[in-house]
Amino acid sequence: ILAIIIVILIVLAYVEPFTEPELPDVKVLNPTGTTTILIIAGMHGNEPAGTVGLNAWLDRISVAELVQRQLRIVAIPAANSWGLENNTRYLRNLWYRDLNRNFVESGNEPVSQFIVRLIQKYRPTLVIDIHEGWGFHKIEPASIGSTVTSSSHKMSRNMAETMVKDINGTITDPAKKFTHRDNIACDIGTTLG
Image (spheres, helix red, strand yellow):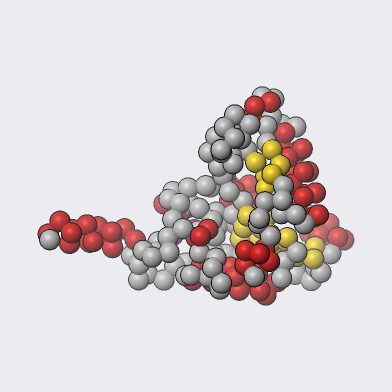
């Protein structure tokens, strides 16, 4: 019994399930745009590249170009800020730890609920969810590493193909080039209703 109590205390000290999570910062570029793209990074705290890349892109993007194209960008660079700070995949939540698995109906916990409310508020045409993967897909087909996955939406496919072309222009090893995975069941209407 003492061992069980010690394990519970260690888990509670690490997870602190009753601590209200920090909600992610949201950056909105060109709030009056008529077409909205939601970009989420840092869903898993042990995948920091998306957060780094998205923040760098946000620093470079031309708001004038967004205005000209009537695009509104809603960006969440660090969806799981606690996980990023602690280099762990998970939220600081005992029951709903994996943020990426919490988007059932209106969300299972405060961070996913917050993101669902953002989606309901802005009704994005396109959602880009940036993750890292292990390995290289061309070397290890079971891996989604070095892939860009799009939905069947034309804008999603076009953006994914452009990203893959641009990324692959910087990679010399053919086995490490990116692959576009198309028509995967990831349409926002299907996944979030």
